[in-house]
Image 1 (tube, chains in turn blue, red, yellow, orange):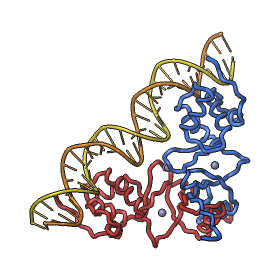
Image 2 (image 1 turned 90 degrees about the vertical axis):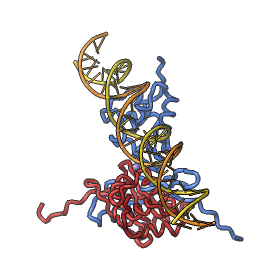
Image 3 (image 1 turned 120 degrees about the horizontal axis):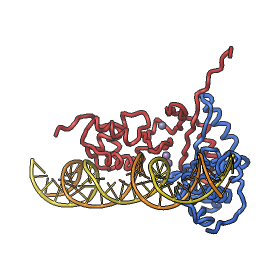
Image 4 (image 1 turned 30 degrees about the vertical axis):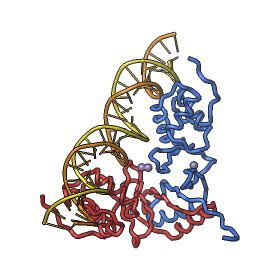
Length: 149
Length: 149
DNA sequence: ATTGCAAATGATAATCTTTCTCATTAATAC
DNA sequence: GTATTAATGAGAAAGATTATCATTTGCAAT
Ligand SMILES: [Mn+2]
Ligand SMILES: [Mn+2]
Ligand SMILES: [Zn+2]
Ligand SMILES: [Zn+2]
């Protein structure tokens, strides 16, 4: 019966601004998401959310990420591996791409205006307007070249 | 009891070269794949294979695309929509990318050496060797600008 | 051509992620 | 505080893929 107390997160505010009903669960999930700077999948979000408020079900996490994505609050990512992953669609964080370490699975973000522009141009020259770019590269850490091999 | 007769496809030969046992089913699936120039999913491959030889199960199609992918014969693609899609990893067809028409779902292939090089460079400058590029863009057909609106 | 054996197949169960159902609960407006 | 309506929880269902296991088959050695 005791409700956990935590401040309204930026995402919770966004939720309100869009006229979405701000339930306890959504407030919790929004808090967890605002607090994350990685790319959790639904199971991981569920774990983090339960830690803040155990009165939450995984069904609601699924529902909420879908809702947030439909409302432009979240971005869904697919890094392979079968489950969707999510991150905040942050205005000032900006569009970015992902490099996945082939050995560790670690996700490294990067931006590149040249790449932005090139993709725009390619698509335009094919007679289309760019709607979405789905891009991730897998790489393997280079062995540092040594003076004496 | 009657076996369908069709010539060995390039992929069937590849299969033999790699020392993979060339079963009737694999010959059929290889034939169907060699005959395709699109990006079928497993269900679609199954449909095409059954047309050539009904003595084939979808389990074997799943097994075979996995085997072929592990052996560099096939490439798996993910265009969203829940099912993996496949195309021949053709040496002379070359690496290419995919533009998906947002309205029709049609897949349009393109190559772009500048893009190849840029991605290589970006990844290298982050200290990695490029292993795989997963890239597809979604676009919407531009309305042709008209002299009189 | 026959035989022997390991590997592949077919049918179906199991798994995994995500969505749906429906009875119950809770958020917002009055 | 009450009413209304939407959201939630628990579990069933769906959809894609993989695993299981008895049976069949490719292929190499006779
Ligand atoms: Mn995927
Ligand atoms: Mn997918
Ligand atoms: Zn990111
Ligand atoms: Zn292609």
